[in-house]
Amino acid sequence: MSTLYSSFNAGISGLNANSTRLAAISDNIANTGTIGYKRVIASFHSMVLSGSHYGPYIAGGVRSSTMRLIDEHGTLTNSSNATDLAVSGRGFLPVTSATAVNGGSDTLPLMLTTTGSFRPDADGMLRNPAGQILLGWPANADGSIGTFPRDTVGGLEPVRINSNQFASDPTSHISIRVNLPATGTAADSDGATHDVALEYYSPLGTTETMTLTFAPTVPATGSSNEWLATVTDPATGTVVGEYTVTFDNAPPNGGRILSVSQAPGAPGGAYDPASGEFTVTVNGQQIALNIGAPGSDDSITQMAESFVPVALDRNGSPVQALVGVQVDPNGFVKAYYDSGLIRTIAQVPLVDVPNPNGLTALNNQAFRVSPDSGPMFLWNAGDGPTGEIVGFAREESTTDVAAELTNMIQTQRAYSSNAKVIQTVDEMLQETTNIKR
Image 1: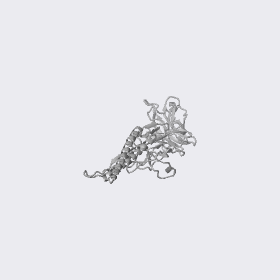
Image 2: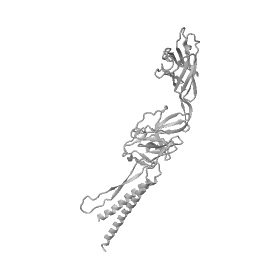
Image 3: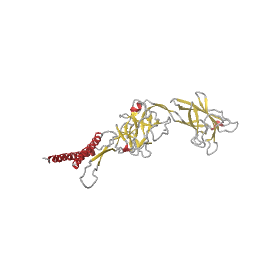
Image 4: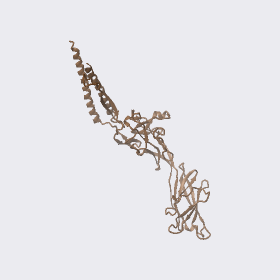
């Protein structure tokens, strides 16, 4: 009778196992259109209770287990939103819950996802419809990314985009190209000076001006080929730079810079002959002025009899408004302004674990690190084992409807067969009961 009852139990275990498989299939089909969904598979494992080849056989039945194939990637599809993000390859985007952020938690819980449609919320944080907020490393004022720990989330912060954000791009470099009259340093010269107005953008986005004055050194006889270059801040009358520029008067470099010197204690930074630059500081703002290297034909010159401003070129821009944000393949969040300025405001790393399928699955296509997944590590996107971050894209569900429907048919037939086993055992037990009659 134990053999007969074991058949009954085996049939019940078969019903349970196929019910589990049907539940997995149902979940997969229900999430066919769910962005970033990872399908679940059910596996069956036999249970052996009979330990001997002799005597009655005791049916052990079957047990089932499920696994979510997190390392399986869905198709990437295009979108019109720049901050719709997906991962092309290995790795996960770090996100956290809006509840934790709004609650002012010091330690934000780390969740992982492979895709998301992120848009700025009322506070400017990039958030998807499920309430997950994108995390990243904040950039410094100059757009560089500092050094942060890679095995913890301590350095990660919500990526914040303010649509009403304004920015200034202060001038840090001005290139000056002028021609000074060779007759200006001759003994019979009238010693006339020549001014060059240098406009620049301040850190506040305003347009300011400083003056570069060239004063010739007039000798008693002959020609000195020497000019005193003085940089002055007209607003205060302060001299911020003073240099003596000597020009060559012999071939092959006639008319080009021979040397640039500075008197002891004179204002301004030292002249670098390799780059042809010196730095002046105006109201705390450092600006490199490039006049050219000695012997170079791309420099200020001293030729002929006329003063000719050839070219002035500066970097920077006035105050500008934010017009858009994009994330590049390496995870750098770039802010674009209406003047053409591009500034890095954050970097989104990719999280990797040794066993992605060991991650704990959460609601809304999110996952959490677990003992089965192994420890996490933060990589720069595109480095190490991780893939790249793709903007204007989302990852589709990994469900294959045709395959799931085929599995459903198989499951239905297997369930019916196990039910038939139970029915058969019931009839056999009824026959056993009828022996007494």
